[in-house]
Length: 280
Image 1 (tube, helix red, strand yellow):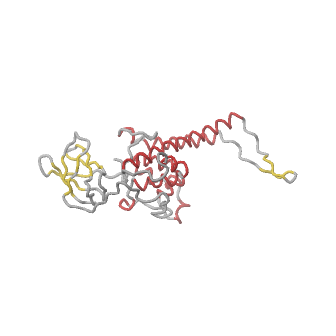
Image 2: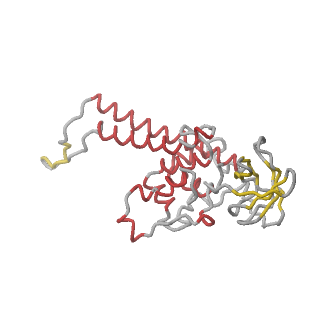
Image 3: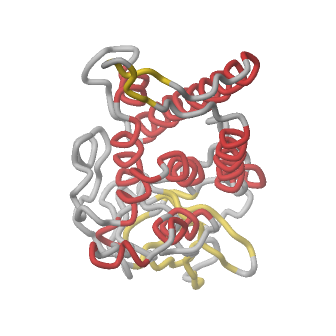
């Protein structure tokens, strides 16, 4: 289930009538968010009502396991938590949860990994297309494969770094010259990875805007591409905050003094944990 709340645990349900069941909200959710509930061994989808729900609030919904969506009717009215039609924060709101929050560290160290997590939340494939459950559950893993392959091939076909030496008062590059084929392969590799990131991030941002009914504000028709091109790190960080409620979920932030003691994969813990379907 894709939304700003990331992975949310399935709710339990108890019978209150022939076709109605009572569901306890697993988290504070905005209007329109969909989550799974289970009754009698069958899973069905629940849509949060316009009033929104708070964690622990019980709502009555029709039990229709063969229907994709069941519209919820609130028993206890909560505050309207809807954020449809607007971003939760700006493109430059990366430090909203602190400069060492897990999502920000991942956005700066490996934005494509964080992009893979958001793709999973949005039920999209690693290529940025809508996907069925069996496909989008492997999206994050496939995104990691892309990253690993890129870095491994990058090391294999890397061209020598410039070595500047001062000769007769002028600095001259004395590094060995790489074969032409190696230079071509290296450039194609970098271009391919860059285009993959740009295209998929553009499609992902457009999908998030559509999900939350957010209109373009600048560069009509190409805002998503411009954001992905000019500031991919900030863009993917904003999408992560939009599709998960870190305030409610309490996703771990990494303290500055401990970063040096952590490995890169631990910094990306937020991504790998949620992508498996668990709640952080």
